[in-house]
Image (cartoon, rainbow, N blue to C red; front, side, top):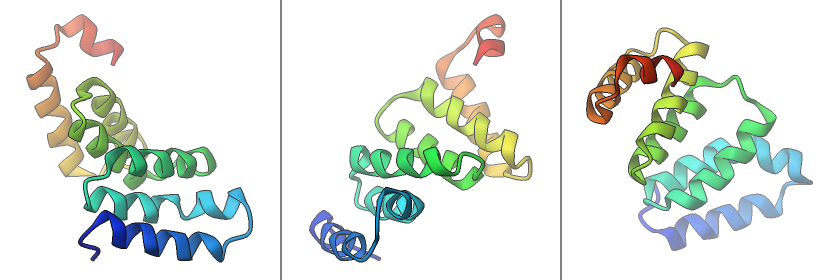
Length: 117
């Protein structure tokens, strides 16, 4: 895929130039977020992904990607919430189950607090 932020920026600029409005831009947000995540531009990826989730909140892979972004920027509790949302939408995501278990272990949550998250 793309090797640098500059290459992703160029592609996204071209892509967004062809779109007509925020709704179309948000519809492409998941794809754009994946590209920025791939070059470790987590804040930019999160921005596009949140726009996408505002339009389509029931897409499990988008919530999984948001969890990966939060994990990458050391926001484990937010990552846990995102992974749990992805699992609520699609219970067949076995890798997400492992992520959730690992985060519970990493966060060393007491059982009462774990129920809230």
